[in-house]
Image (cartoon, rainbow, N blue to C red; front, side, top):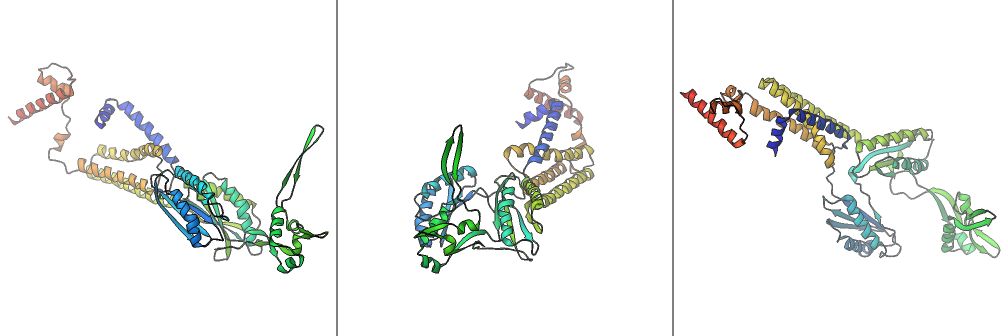
Length: 466
């Protein structure tokens, strides 16, 4: 196959040159579009299912939640390993698939099985949470929200991260999630007073029922008046703390008991389990995770542009500080490898020129190096392989191998009769003329052509020996 391609290329040099140049241009364009990363993603598909039930202990979660989940997930195709870890109030089931399994197809299988088992879980168990198609290597950007002293508190910073920063970053193409850590999550809290509850004869069930009913809207149908139709709604969602205070809990005689009569209503931070801290003090940290298979460099560029727009709308004294940008690590790593490849290519060309002493042979290797890299884009793009340190290392090895091959076959370690070996052999037509006594024709059978050429060479060698 390769011999036929080479023979056809030499027979049609113009067409071969145009084809190579077109492939190089196409490969060079495709190389610019390849996603860039430090290392290829060699991790196997792993999905985590988190189930919470605050009223259950470790053994109860193991027998009532973890075991049914493991049994349901064990029959999925390409499953390699299933593990579970249970603690007080929470259990986590990890499903690991084979490395060649499709991510999206595997996650769909897991989601279907989890939905089937969810209806069989013990009462009071929250809906299972299934992880997305992301991992630790997909966390590409991290920044913090910081405020100057006296400008904004931690609760305000957390509100900014929840409702402004997160919503804007999720609109960036390639962003899968934005995790927030630190600060205080704002809540409307109903802090009950047992003495006032006992004095008015109010139970906890009445408080819970009143609080839930005070935060919903209700539909009232519609009213028709002539040619007009009016929609009726009951607006009941809480807009402020005063709305909660004026919520009716019960009616004692003819006197309504308000929620503010038996409790203290206030804005307060939720109970937190962790903090984000710098040398200056506490901050709010945001960590951006990219989608599976997305280009890290392009996603990071979109995040930086979005943060520049967000910074202009932040309150005075609030700043955004970048902590980690994976695109800078990629640029540094790939830049070092590219410089090493460039230096190696220059040294290979210089060594070939010095040792070979043959300008044409060294020129062939000089053009082979960039052509091979450009043509690699034609193969990498359809296969979905990105640019990373391993692929660039392969390019560098290709250049060194080309230099070694030319040094082995074309260097000064040639046999003594290298000038005779490089001399152009007689053409097939000339050989046939000598053998046939001057008759000029072309031998069309390749096997016969080789035999005639061998016979002529044998006769010539005998004459020289004589």
